[in-house]
Image (cartoon, rainbow, N blue to C red):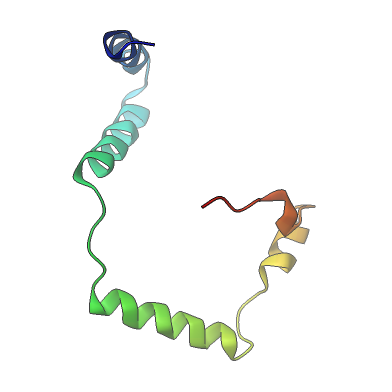
Length: 80
C-alpha cells in the first residue's frame, strides 16, 4: 500500500473511534514519534531492586499466574 493510501486509511479509521480510543491512539503515536526515553540511574536502581526481590524467592512465579488462566509460557513465544 502506498503512503498516501495508508494515510488516507488511517484518517478514515480515526474518524470512527470514540473519544477515549482516539486519545489512546494519539498517545501511542506520540510515544512512537518521540522515541524511547533514556534509561536513568533511578531506572537501573529499580530494575536491580526488582531482580533482588525475585531472586530472594518473593513474588509469584509467572507460570503460576499463567496457569490460573489455563496458559503456559510456551503460549507466548519471545521475539527479538
